[in-house]
Length: 448
Image (tube, rainbow, N blue to C red; front, side, top):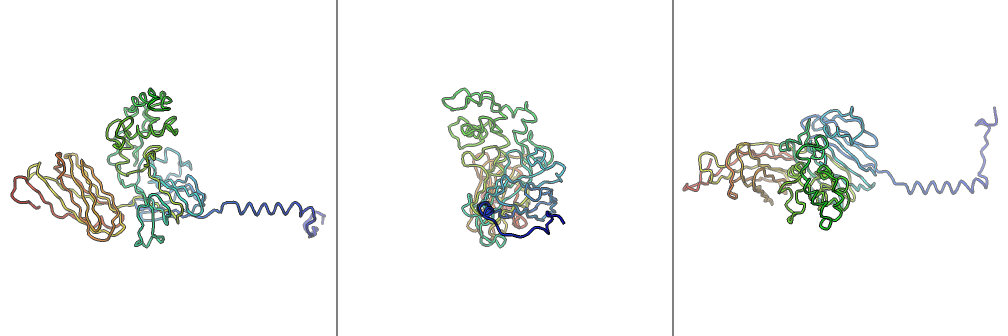
């Protein structure tokens, strides 16, 4: 047995030398542990409400491989806070062959994307549905137990699945790519951004839209301070808010050009006149204030949800179910200038999300009115079709939907489609009621 073998080592107390140098080190270690952030577990539940199987991917500390989710199935990731620049994808095929680069453009051709950031162990969270690059599978995000949130969409004490009685919700309501500008329709199930189109096809007419505005901006530094730095930039740089357009001085110019209001007196009429970002206009029409180009939050827009504390996050892909009906306004039995009112009804539950959409067909166009009335609820939309009402039902009961062409001089006449989407069963209870045609030449109303 050598003197270096464990059995020959005698236990002994600390010498004065050891005490002098080990105790401060031990105290430093304890203080370091106390000062280090405690990693709290934060649940992110992903629900597949689609009719197809999805492959879920998330950039978490413990799971990066796709998780196959059957329709109506769910999977919960547990991430450690802080979790910065997180990404959760819902993909319609297995993307494991694409590797783990979640910024790969190929991922955008296969998946929907949610971007959550959890900044503290108390559940401080910021999350957004970003459609800067593409738009695809519909999704909804709900922050549970949100305090000091902005915006708080609704708090519903009647929903037993939300124990803290409060949630913050953001919605992307499209469930199809109908309406995507033709040039932007990508392979698979996506509508690509104007920026990515210009990466692939720089000579496309869309990619020179802002040429004159860039020239105006660069040539008038007294009116547009700092804009002289844009002289060498292109329309693609505007779409991407690149170079100067991504600086503090340049972001407002970038936002104004994309929205079609650069240099115009009335800057509230976004996308009213060309030139504008075709992709951003379409995205905002179907989703509301959700990011459709970089710095789309300039001017208090954008789709962020933020909470100082929360209990978890629920991401639902394909959150709403849908029913479509076909009908007519001002059919051939009466003069096209006469009026028509169609009535529909459905039963809904308090807290249920309902979206009513009125769309024209290829054979008809014009203006019409859409109205929903029910317990403590009246909402209207009117003008050239399509029109949409997106609401949370305030009470349980029967709701009535009115479609009419009593609006302006360009009255709609001909076939139309009306659809209802709902987070509950309201869509299954949607039914047609009466139709009243009011003829200017008739002595009484005609009901069919």
